[in-house]
Length: 362
Image (cartoon, rainbow, N blue to C red):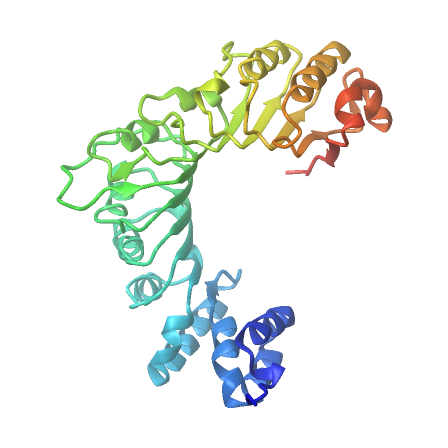
């Protein structure tokens, strides 16, 4: 007869149990003291994310000092750290540099906020973070006036990176992005890119000297204008699975969605009456056998006739593909009264595909 194992030492059950506890320091410490079998799971959960984002610099400095002391005494804990979040403006430059240059073994997600003007020293420190060999996802909120400083971050960035989010400002100062000759580093094949570009950023991203390869791009989000979707080299590829479409009166062009046969999610914003026809022209390009399973329509105004055409278009998509059409809206949406959506979208409503999502305030 086999030896019966206690359910309290089954790794999968332990992981589920510890995950339910949350981030309580006292509770996780207590879990680690239950038995030797509980130690690894408790420590892995406790150290999985390291954050220095307190609004108080002194707290961030103390947190790093304490963490460094723990890791120096117990270096085996380094392997548990998978996510790193840092507010560089609320740390001294020396501490920020020390964090960026620390030998994290298995970090796969990094977020850095630098709302004050990016210095060369900070950029060089961030360069070390972006070279981590296990890095998969990078998010940055950056303010810089010198593009050359910003570009230093990406020298030799890790080829394992797959997801990049860049939210940039430059205080209205426009200097050219001049990429340096690329060294013999492998290209970074991104699968998703979300950016708020400053002038020149898209041109740099698509420059042959850029470290990024967009041939595998599946998700592209560029805010606030759709026009940059058409930048040569940065437009979504045929592999793209998610496309945000932001329609503006100053861009009287639809987007041909049939170019993206693998498209699974569509986000379309219609901010004005004049943008409604552009939206309909865009939706008309969805092929009959589309793989789209979710559509989100964000609008401040829709006419009844437009609702009927949207209802007709999405009702033609096979049920096995389309899971929902979500309307993100205010209380009154043009001709549309939100308390009787089925009157304006009868076909979608009859198939239980229509959902209302209350608009989130910025």
